[in-house]
Length: 505
Image (tube, helix red, strand yellow):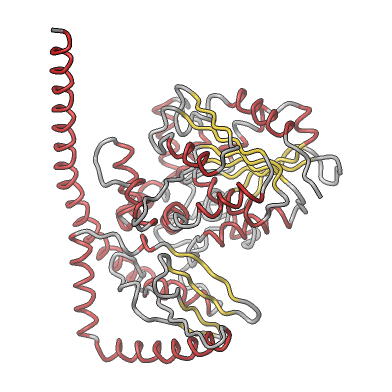
């Protein structure tokens, strides 16, 4: 009797689950179709307003041409082309006086298929047809450039010809950059122009804002630690939580570096940047490793920062003393799946439930809705600061709020796509290097209640690096894995650093 009752309960649960999923999918389809339409309308609105205020059309990805369209731009002896056919990601190739630089641009920026996006592309193609003379002239020019560059590449590769392609929006965004001029004003009309957000324009535009604490410079017995924050955050995620809780002995032995990533906090927010992995990593190298003459270091990274930490570890394998990753965004991609698109759908599944999936989907899929959110919140963050303090009576730590709104849409949009999605086909190689070439301790922390990134992400990393230790913390989520347990976490980090083996050689 009890077995029959148990089976009936199981069938009832299954029926409820299937019904709930069907309702969620139905409502999601309706809501996201409306959002598709809204984003298309906002695209037109922003183009008109940009033209009125800045006298220039702002290129966007929702209306851009196919990624396989042959394009190139030349200026001042420099050329930008893009990746070889068949490559999953788009590589911008910048020919400078002495070397080639490759920047990976995620195809998810311009390839997010929806009914309305197809309509918008059809509209743009029709406009191009009406303006066919000018467009054909541009295409002929680009074809000539591509032929020259293909010949140049073939001569370097022993006769092997390489064909390059590029998304038209990327070309438009970089036309001013390669010419050495700023296309759009700093800040743009939709960005905040307060002293905090624009402090970088009065200081160095070539280095990040770095908060330095701990041991004094020049102490030959000290060790260095680099802290890298996650998406829509800042160095205060560390300096307001962990730094005050490290012991006096730790602060006398370790130099602590917490950076504001490019585009966030008090760091530069260039409007002509694509916020690629290379740009982020090179800015960290220039601002910390080179400026402070760091020869070896520990890394502590949270969320998106974990990808940058792995990239740094691959570039400096002999310098890493320990690697601590907190909620790393690593999804194993099934065979046959396109990595960037798979990760996009895992991070942003276009579902209204749970709410975190809804928020992530809006941030990832809608270029103009997310720009509107930045316009309403980031540009007016001083008002929101006042209202939040008034309503919550300072119960929400101010540094968390500052990290949330001290950025630009351009920085957040490109960083999200080019780092989270765009590196999906690279992380496996990074983990392989960490496994085989690095001998340092690898420790991974994850909150059991994390709704932003599932626990499986940390176990996926461990499956690639068997020596990595995974520590699951009960009753903690994506933020409270650090915030709220900073004293305990500070002690755990001190233990990791003190137990790290000295670097050989």
